[in-house]
Length: 241
Image 1 (tube, rainbow, N blue to C red):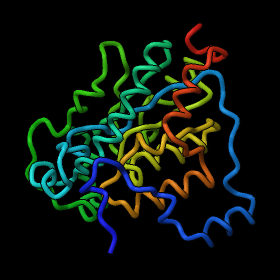
Image 2 (image 1 turned 60 degrees about the vertical axis):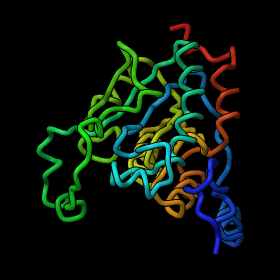
Image 3 (image 1 turned 120 degrees about the horizontal axis):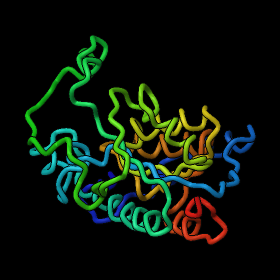
């Protein structure tokens, strides 16, 4: 039986969790090709809140305080995300955040109540973005009632206004709001980049399968070091307005 990554300081190698025959099937079908990234990127920080990140501790300990959290594994992703966030800010790229709209009546809709009906006690700070990645004054915070950052929000208008052509998506959780945002971004014609070590999920299996699925069909999943090289590429023109 393998050791869970929640007990280590590094995330698991998600690619090793995908059977070789699955990679072969997708390659044979023509999926998984690398995209050409654009010159006007934006960074989208998805739901990097205390509720989903939790404590810098093993997951079981973190869940005692934040029941929906990932724990130490998420903090590894946060540390990689902070590097990309700093680079995006230094270059003047658009940075936008998503958080749950705590006041929306949609949160109490019947389908959500039935699927996510168990609301366990959590600290008041659960809805706050973790301090390491907290938005600066002037950075957009999009409040959403559904998984996708685009559903019922002004995000698309913001991207169009800034003439963005590529989204770098970090945060959590990989199988939920990150994946929903990536699929919608792809559907709207955006190039999408997912730094594999800057996203997190409470389930390692769902994390791996979701990264595999997104990489095959909707975006490019790659190490944050590769994304960092892209963000610092002097030929990108987003910072020049």
